[in-house]
Image 1: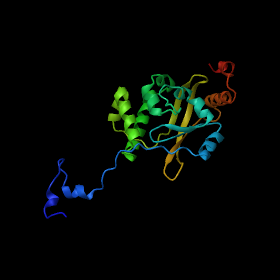
Image 2: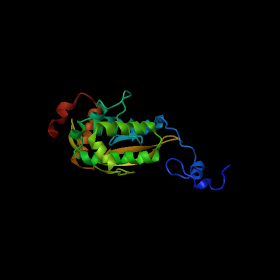
Image 3: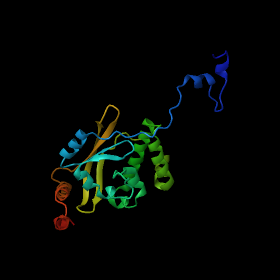
Image 4: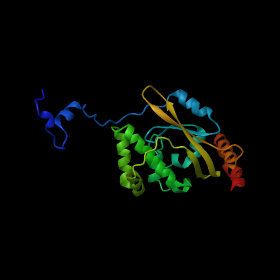
Length: 227
């Protein structure tokens, strides 16, 4: 029972006791297990043959992809920052693998967008322990991440023209788009698509990359005319 005048008392950080008592208890930090992408999501990705396609969660882990998506970001998938389950993370690759600077033509813009997306996720999921651990690791290891995180930029959507230097087919200029993809009643993930402008050199190179993905081991002679 609250006695008269108790609402004027304050706790150790200056909050009225009555206000504090009225608030729900804080959630304990959770190590949230991600919902796996269901088979129908992989079927959807596999049906997309002329766009590099990914499904990622709010922490920017790639949880599903099509064959062209794997080939498009081959250096990220092969990076030492990819976890033991073979899942890369866009933020880890950007900030913890120096090779990412050779991959992304405008590395700084991509890095800033990556941080802003993590900022938005931190606002949506403040009790996600795995997210906090990721941000802590990036802040500890990368001065670039610390600087960008301190800017407090938030981005919900990230749609732009992406310039990527691919080791097999050269420079690719692709349109990046993202869509919400419900994968269960508990989770909504992001479907990311990289698509070339019809009739462009990048479309030709993306088609070549798709053919190399379908027939591995035929890369050298097929890419000579693009270099």
